[in-house]
Image (cartoon, rainbow, N blue to C red; front, side):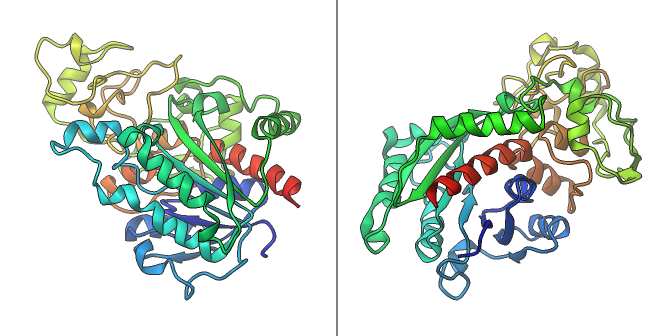
Length: 370
């Protein structure tokens, strides 16, 4: 079995992979269906074999082999599980085919038989269809009939990114499966925390929007800016040795949108306007606060009506670089593709700093598993 090797399924632009690589793992293979997003992944992970295809077309023994990786990670697209999605689909989301993409994930686990797998998704999956979907997932991985008499012990936990030094109120569910051996998750979590604090005492400190984006210069037309000096420990964690940073380009808003943003003060949203705004987002036209964490960065952070994504002082939404910093992407990570694709890449990613903690935890699980 490839020691410290990882396969990243539903890889996106690579948030999971960044954290695992930083923790000393070797990501060997990734699967991502979207061409632009796969390009961003490959440009930032040159040594990883990218399968730019539908996972339903590659979850077979031609593309994967027994024992090629110790760890499989991935989070199938969460729209089908999302409670927000339920509000905008008149017929609900129970039969959304995206809810069953985990079966292709399962197929790869069946073939490779990693020591550990990590399954990430929105916490809404726990209650969806009165828990039936989640029970089906747990049952599939726990069933010895799927693994020639072997099976995975399942642990799961809802995690808040802010508790891992990420300036964002993002909550995600992590499901960890261990082959043929149960683990004491809380004990290993505490061990992991202790180890990380010994190396980086500020890792778990509370951080804010200001900690993430203060000190960045004004956006430029091409998104290229001079690399500013980090002004706090969070920025030091993300900092790049490059002379320039990329993706710091502002969205051009309509005069109407700018006029609305001009009326909104720190911490306020559309309810402060003297007009009715039609939006499913309660934070629509919300202005961020320097001294608070961000709301969850979504794929629509470039849109004022998409949520609380207006810059704390300027009358514009945050740039991709600012969103990436809030998501804890390193400053030397470059996003490629159209504006909408880049927003999707950032908004759908696992925060790399959170991923680093998960990867460090998995390393301890593997050590105990050996």
